Amino acid sequence: MNATTLAQRAYAPTAAPTRSARSIEYDVIARITYRLKTAIESGKLAPLLEALHENRKLWRTLAIDVADDENLLPDDLRARIFYLGEFTSHHTSEVIRKKASAVPLLEVNTAILRGLKQERTLS
Image 1 (cartoon, rainbow, N blue to C red):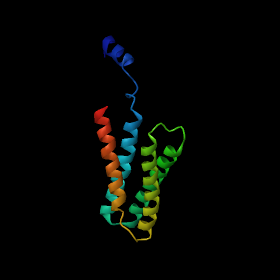
Image 2 (cartoon, helix red, strand yellow):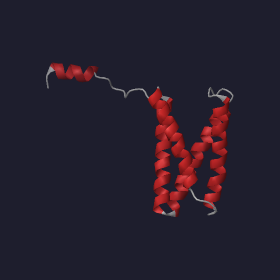
Image 3 (cartoon, rainbow, N blue to C red):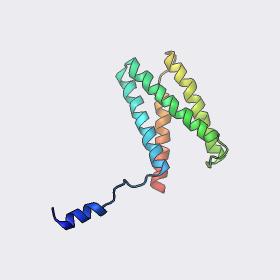
Image 4 (cartoon, rainbow, N blue to C red):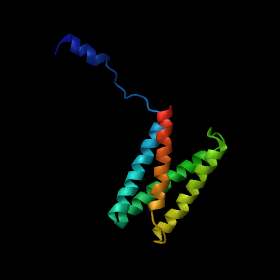
């Protein structure tokens, strides 16, 4: 190793590039959606219950965030996200009681991901 190589390493960026909140949000929803999809396809109860729980926590967090008066999203969008949080909570209970399919939850998440992805490409 020579002095030039050592200098390049010493002054190289050490941190990963800063990611936007939307990018992080997209990645979190995508990960949870993938787990939910995989659990549905497996047909096994334990992974499905874990994925449902994680998805319900996600939507509870989103609902709490948009209910905050300090949230900067437009009121109409905040209301729709809050409604989806309520729907997700109720529908998850129905899935757990084996009275409904988990597929609509997957469809909601997928639609949100499409919207976030479109927003990312427009930025």
